[in-house]
Length: 212
Image (cartoon, rainbow, N blue to C red; front, side, top):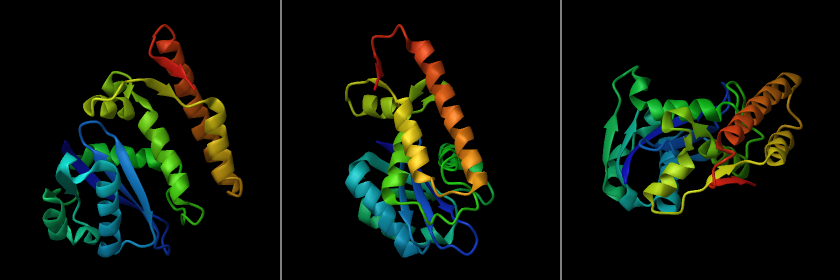
């Protein structure tokens, strides 16, 4: 149960597609949906879908957003979900710090300026799962997934994405990308593999380590 931060990630100019991100403020666990436009009705459907099918209404107390027109139906959210809706001060995105950080991680896979043409719901789900499995120094090197499971009373296991899974995920999704994008993919891949190696070395003596 807690407060969530919501935002949208825009595609390039001229493209109507966007990503809606909803992040649990206490754990940095994120949920995402790709939408075909940024109309208030479309974004509302995406948020309600995440709340209904993944988070559940009883687990949300409040949602914090910016003042974007895509959140114009905030009164409907309050009515349908029984929550409180709050807005940040203008030009104060730092008031949604967890969400901004999550969006930066999403941008490692969906670059700024891309039109999101090749982005499918299954691709975005894979990226979201991977981000939720990253181990954060700010959380004592635990991942958002571990913390979220702990809150829900589930068993806690340290999971590390397999190297082949990361390579397959990125190479398959961007095999038709431009040369510039492929260079960026390589950089992301190298960073992910480096994080994975550091984590394995740090936890090699832990009974909780699971190398899948």
